[in-house]
Length: 200
Image 1 (cartoon, rainbow, N blue to C red):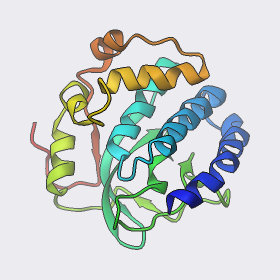
Image 2 (cartoon, rainbow, N blue to C red):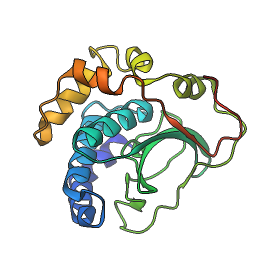
Image 3 (cartoon, one colour):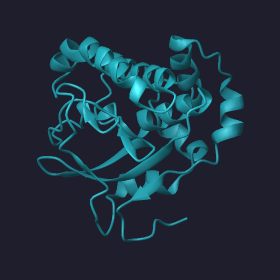
Image 4 (cartoon, helix red, strand yellow):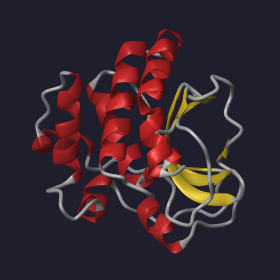
């Protein structure tokens, strides 16, 4: 989606996520982590920021007591694209899909609990499409743990850990970046639908 369209819809998406929250695990915390991630994404106009923002959401969820899986694989929309997202109880949570790479496939609104946040209906995106390999960038990301990945996030930021702490403050989480790094630095993404084994 275009950034202007995303900005025009973001508050309606916040409301939709909060309305759906009671149907999800630790609903209020899940919605808070999702909305904080989405707000950071839009403020930074982070087109193509799925790898970073999925990681941030995964960390915020963990610190809020919600168990999730940080995933990477191929998504099918108008075309197919490499992508990172979060799963909770086999449901898709994907804030970043609304801002694809410039020139990337139009994929639509964010996805919360596998639902399109604009329609409230199940998303028509297909996550984890079988593919033999990721492109070079996604394959590199898939092979890195979060501590190794952290230097590749926005250069203006100190680290993935500091940015996660910044967004956590938006819903009352007082997080220490070094503690986050110690707890979650070894975390790696779980490949979905990929036949080829990602290099360790």
